[in-house]
Image (cartoon, rainbow, N blue to C red; front, side):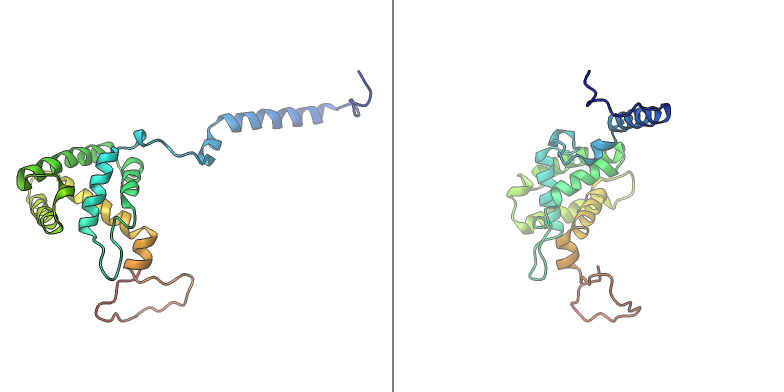
Length: 191
């Protein structure tokens, strides 16, 4: 061996430091911690809602939170993927199953009560159908999917940039604290 490749002789303390650092790095890398730093997106198949369910729930959310002159609606805020993500990552399996079965029930109710698919109905019919289903959900006895559906739609919309900055009155923080600020008629609530 060439003497230029060999530096000074290594002592035991340096050998242990380097071996420990090498073993610790290998253990850290293989532990899955670095997988959280990945920018790759999960495929749609790992989500609770199928693509068709996600599109339907976005249409329902857009009927609940429509586009107005003052603010864009739920569809403009792209709430479908957010609802799917929230349902997948933040809700227990029983709530996930309730939503999946609820969307099937919703489709059946739409065909039974209106004779067609929800997306093909005019806005007035959509709103009327949602009012009927909401009335059914408020009847005593059992858990209904519509409350969860509305909760997810509202949460996804009002936590989106569109919902916070356009539907609510948004003031960038940090800013001055004003404990009591009167609202004028027609003014949006504070974000």
